[in-house]
Length: 92
Image 1 (spheres, rainbow, N blue to C red):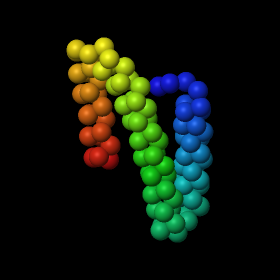
Image 2: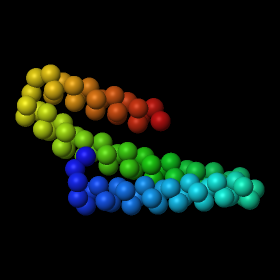
Image 3: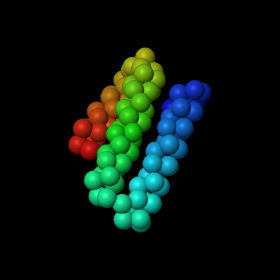
Image 4: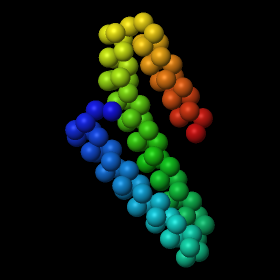
């Protein structure tokens, strides 16, 4: 992962998601209405998916493009990694 603003933005997004999850735990502890809890779980899940897609995009733009310049086994390895990551995201 590259350093700089992209990384900082992802960390901030993850901190917001962490706060959402703590809020969900509080709702469960306080026996909030189930549909309200499920709505918040769905929002947190979408937020995590968004982070995953941003990470995948960075991987494709940086790691995979650098490996393509090198070629050979490294490139093939990075393509397989990306393909496996995409498959995991699709299944989740």
